[in-house]
Picture 1 (cartoon, rainbow, N blue to C red):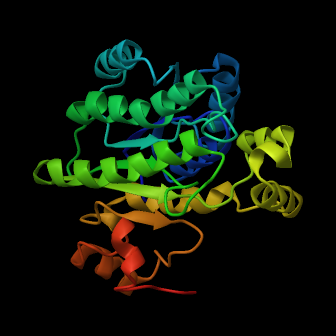
Picture 2: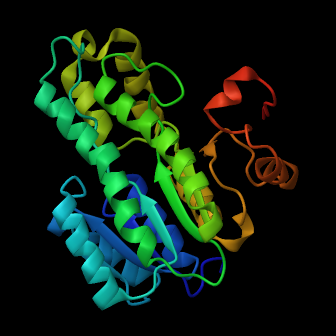
Length: 283
């Protein structure tokens, strides 16, 4: 079990990708702390974790967009949980759908606060509490709109691209403190977020993405376990010294040893600067 004796915090851990990551971490031997806003979803998720791999897992109702609440969560971690070796920031919302000139800007602000500032708050609060005999790990879940334009979803896309740059900056800032900090793009995983697209309709969401969403929903999309597998690897000692990277769970051959060594040796590879085609792996 690659995460035995580790304690991992996962925001957005009660549903979708976050829950898949929590399950994978538990199966791999970790004690998991899941946090999200909905107490009922948390209760159901915690029951699942305890059935799959009992290990004194815990849950905490938290809105990551409120700094004071995140700081209280940090106090709870210090006093109740104790040592933490990994953090996964998966909490997120789509935000408003439509042209940036017509959407509700308060909803735009809310998306930035949850998706981006929530991650900043968590990293700032939890990183100083993290202890590990090996490298400490932070994984930020990015994706949609971070690598390509995502019209009509500007709040979501802007927050996700901000996460990538924040991840890279933080990886440099905390490198001497033995942190590995990376960003994962999970691929087109079917979650509640995509229900929002179908409800919005093609006129608001855009014909191309609406059609792609409908097709992916019908096909089943990318399994959330794909992102969970990569995240578990990045939380483990097997990924030590891989840091500051932006990795695609369904497309990057991260299990390949040659690829892993390139991640360790080339500062530009697997970052936003990968678009220069300096190196590019295809399946």
